[in-house]
Each structure stands twice: as structure tokens, then as C-alpha cells.
Image (cartoon, rainbow, N blue to C red):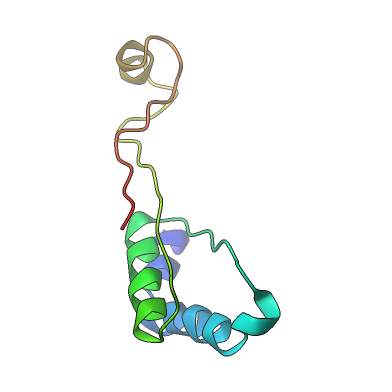
Amino acid sequence: MVSEHLARNRERNSLIANTYAENWEKYGQTIIFADRWYQCEALVELLRQQGIRTDVLFGRQDVNAGSAEARVATGGAGYRPNRTRRS
């Protein structure tokens, strides 16, 4: 899958972190959205290595929101976040 390949691409993640770190005065407080939780973790680590104060917040869904299993697990809501992390 293309999005998984991009999320795991170290050079791309370094470029994102470096671009922000080099322009933090211009960008100011910023939210960086990532498609995968492990990309969130990688970006936080890369930014912290450059002295950028950062945090991460992500959610993860283990079941297909349109599946019968998901509807039962969530009481019909279709989505139940089961993992949130702040560091």
C-alpha cells in the first residue's frame, strides 16, 4: 500500500521534520497529520532530536468500521477509539 510505504520512508520523515525544524519561526505552533501511528512516533522522535518541543496524539481502530463486528463492539456507533497516547 502506498500510504504505508510513505509512512515508513525514513528519508521522507526526515525531510518533514527537517523542513519544520528549519522553519519553526515561520510556521509557529503547527499540527502535523500522519496516516500511521508509527509515522507519528517517528516524526516526534526526529523533531525532539532537533530540540523541537513536541507531543503526539493518535487513535487506532482494529476493526473495519463498516463490519458487523464493529457495529456490535461499538453499540452501533461505527467507531470506538481504543488507543490514545500522549508522550
